[in-house]
Amino acid sequence: GGIIAGVLCCMLYCKIKKLNFLEYFDLVMPEIALAQGFGRIGCFLAGCCYGRETTSHFGVVFPASSQAPAGVSLIPTQLISAGANFINMIILLVIAYNFSYTVAKNKGKNKSLPAGGIGYIYMILYGIGRFLIEFLRNDYRGEVGFLSTSQFISIFFVICGAGLLLLSIEPCQHKVKQRAVLAQSPLLDFMLIGREPDSPRKLTLSWTCTARDKKIKVK
Image 1 (cartoon, helix red, strand yellow):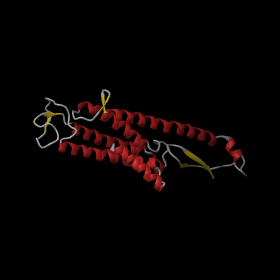
Image 2: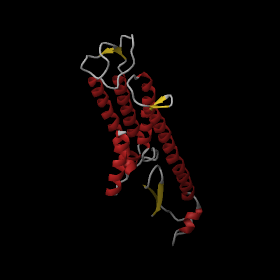
Image 3: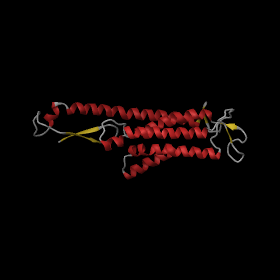
Image 4: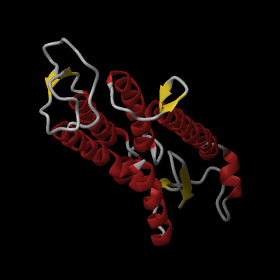
């Protein structure tokens, strides 16, 4: 819930300031994963979001002052969640460094994820991790059928993340291919005012819009 509210507020802020929301979405999501990891450590210290009873050596017994049942060995789902979030952050940073839209735009790379791609991958990874960890938890979180409320929301996260990622990649790939064909076509020479079909021309690529959509400028 906090993540959804934060994203909506960020969208509103970017709209007011006339900023590209998807670029900021990519920028903040690895940090969100980091903050969530530390937040889960806080849950562990408070005893909330606790796991099921276990006889494993990795079980944790919480004191009577915590929110978890005292004197019972429980699965430390808070620490598992924290570790998953930290791993999520590392994966996002590696992908962002090599394939993010903003980095590719600044370095002039031809291959990149669409703008918002890092955020979409976060939604997929977080949704999968949260869905699985929910099976280990034993605190009440609400129910939607045989799933917990958090699992239901996680499914929504994964579907939305995967769908948005695919929808943002495919159209722009098609546009780039079309423009690449146009750049090699004699028709482009014919369309140039005061320039013969075989005269030299210089093509420069500039990053525009979202995804890997590129605009060809002729000088």
